[in-house]
Amino acid sequence: MVPVKPAGDGVYRVEVDGRFETVYVAGSADDAWAFWNGRVYRGDFRNEAAPAPRRADRTGTRQALSAPMPSTVIAVRVKAGDQVRSGDTVILLEAMKMELPIRAPSDGVVAAVHCREGELVQADVPLLELE
Image (cartoon, rainbow, N blue to C red; front, side, top):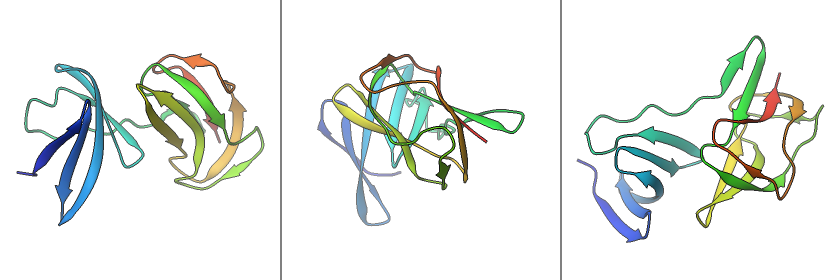
């Protein structure tokens, strides 16, 4: 079992291989969102099974990136036509006093941006498309 220590409201310190990681959790006990290391996990964390990470939706050759929860767009760091590399932060969101970077899941080209700074966005609504 992995040691978990509360560090604040919705903030936990998790010890992994001798180092501490910060995990942010929001939502209800049976439908929680956990944010760790640039990835968002959704599920019922009361059981011992590890939740599957959220993946970008694939439609043909395009990948649609969406917000993991209702949030505000703080920064859009790319525009249509920009090249991105896997792991690049393309959009920065804020929700529940947490910054949520949306990262490119793979190398590609930005096909379209569907949000702007200051906009309130809902969960699972496409914010950006990659080719």
